[in-house]
Length: 249
Image 1 (cartoon, helix red, strand yellow):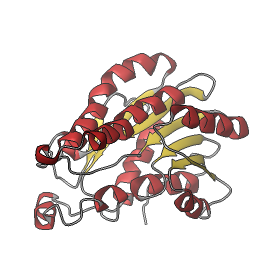
Image 2 (cartoon, rainbow, N blue to C red):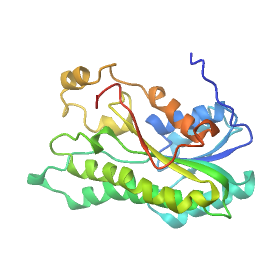
Image 3 (cartoon, rainbow, N blue to C red):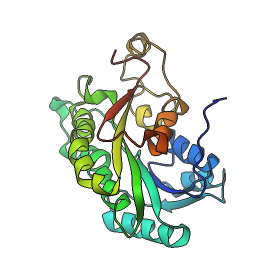
Image 4 (cartoon, rainbow, N blue to C red):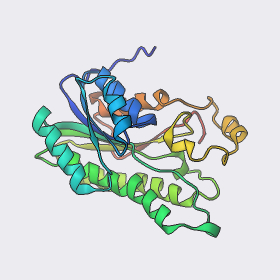
């Protein structure tokens, strides 16, 4: 059990990609730390299972994060009920091969829309005065693939590189009210919805050899996310942090 404890009592957060993997773990840990959390994902059944873990503090909105109107309406309803936001986490994303020989532009566009553009929209909403407290913190999920991608994964690598590439510009736009934005770059996380689509396609021996500290579970990444949301990270913005078991070392 971790000896590091966070106190988010009375604070409100929105988390996308909340139905599985790292997004789900972040929701649970924020709720455990006292926060009210709006959990967003497409699968209502999985969201309801998550809500059952802590019904008093987890509130769900089944929707597609690329639907900006529905996303904003869900945040509006949540804020009206619980108060303004202290931040958000964009963990939504899809991961798949897009090799040139069988290039699927629709799939590539979906990867970019969900991983990048929906994250930018979340930053916009989380820093909007009518929804946000001052000095919010938003964490976007990038990936080690932004810096070291495998063959056939150029669309995913491009989307995650875009997440990192936008941080400096966004940080400069939102800093006047103390708002912050950062990204985390996880390595290979076991039992994650994001990696399950690649099972059997990635060399497991390669993964184990190149993650110096072994493969991760979602809780190996969520601690960094909570740290970046907390006031202990109040002097950190516009940066990408690898949480990768040494993959990029």
